[in-house]
Length: 238
Image (cartoon, rainbow, N blue to C red):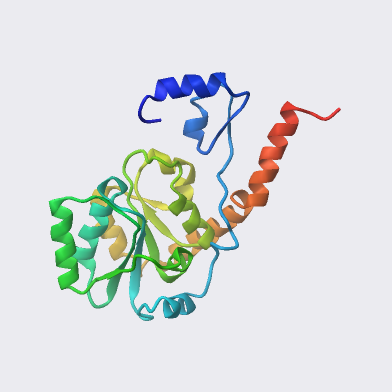
């Protein structure tokens, strides 16, 4: 859906009897498109005891921890994360940053990071089992604004399967999951994150709903059954 999209669309549609779309938005671009939720390993990404995972990752057990998983990239909304860490972080609220690459960072982001480090609010861990991160944090930040290259982002699916409450952006790449995360605009993150303790019940309900959705729709078996049904409809056995 990015560079040379019209050419790619024509080639894909002409050369395929069926096109499987991992979002409804992508699926609707093709006359022969069929939507199927992408799979996630629900046995690897699953709810675990927070105290246990924080002990494994050597994280403070009695602090509010707000997580971010993904590349350090403004296009992924990392500028929002850095600003929140600078504004809200401190002794009682920590921001856990887990990343693989540094792709796109601005001067303003660097200023926010420096402020956050001075307040001792950042915990940066690069190479750790990411499936434990989802269990260790109180909420996950996914402040993507615009379209994302993978639709939906794998981070969102992993968090849903882990039963991790997500506070995310209005990206069209997240649209199919809007009922499963708290959608906010850039100007609203500060107020929403401040209310984490007050909306604990809402977050717990969101966590349960996300896990149930993942088991029903995102497991390998569920996706395989859906795909098999579509293929059998197209090529019925005689």
